[in-house]
Length: 254
Image 1 (spheres, helix red, strand yellow):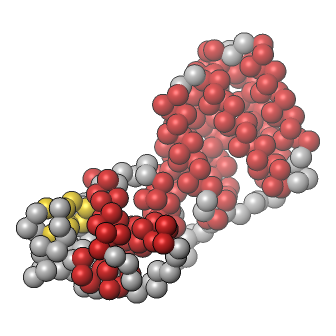
Image 2: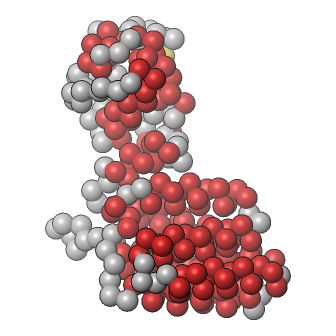
Image 3: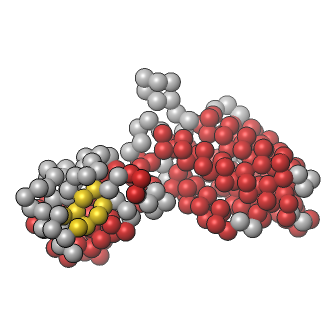
């Protein structure tokens, strides 16, 4: 498929970003920039990417790199390449929001924190359901592993990086114990992308780590008691409450 076929109806030249990378990574850099342009709305749904010629000149790469980059965009659901019409930006409803590059760009450019609010809500639903499953399945060994994971958090409470890793490890353990492979994969994809954003980490209110330990302990108690509804409620309260405490104010609104 060619993206030169719509030269008579193209979008404005994209913002200059000066892509300079080793040859093997040129395509990655081009894809990232094109994703950013689409996610930020510099190119809106229904608009066309510039054809190959202008893109090769702007990015300083070959037509092969541009074609491969556009193919990656199409795989992510961001564009549709149509013979004779060019490369058109798709509506948001067609984007693959679980794609790491797409989701990462949406988080990075989300000034209102709306996507992080959505992400936290979806994560809360997934992980609370998995906590309930863990409560149904947990045996003595599973409970002992959870207790050890919580103890690790308590042991490193004065070491913020180690504490945050121990916190993540506890959540991952609950996911594994749930036996829900698909839900676990989805939740970890969302969580991993969010962790790359400083805005997701937000602020640490007073006694934040102590509150986190108490909330994890409630999850552990419900799982060890074999109470799915209580485990679900405790995990949901923890994730929702933690995000509410960490969430940065949006200028002009909070």
